[in-house]
Length: 183
Image (cartoon, rainbow, N blue to C red; front, side, top):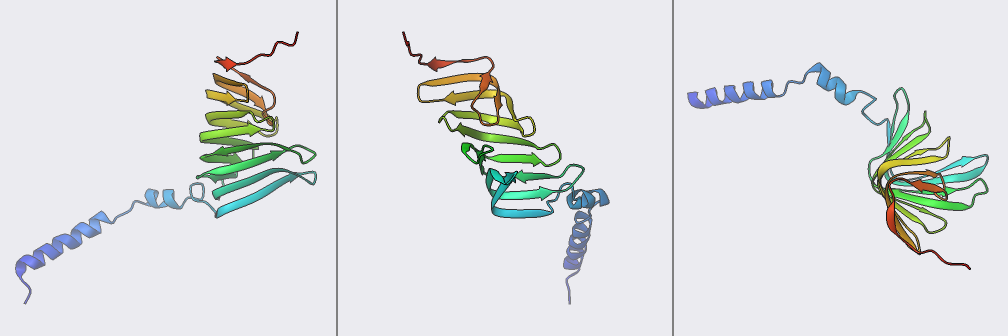
């Protein structure tokens, strides 16, 4: 025979569970909407992108998620490493960071989190975010930047550069650098 107190507790528990497990249709749609759920995830990804038969970019990512919406995009939600090459296939630099988003429609790469960009001249840019407009070969950030080279350290807030990080301008600069007197 079941104790009446146990019957009441069991009934309350059942009602509590049923009420607590209700999901609104909007909540279900939000977590199943293809705009917010990757259609493909690749782990320990490695991709080469080429233009006119020449490898221009090599991408390595711990995880790479592909999303499909009005503008298809890829997200590297974990660490990534990118190698850049010029039109002759010569190495021009690398980029490492914590997270990246690439819009296939606008051909734009947004990065954030402990970003390091190094060029073939061994100059190293450190910042928290960077936007790379691939079609116009423009790299931009409004954030704090630190550029280290063999002879100098420059700091500033804001940067514009070409894609190979060989020609750049820093806004609001400060730092220490050596100049050679060639007289």
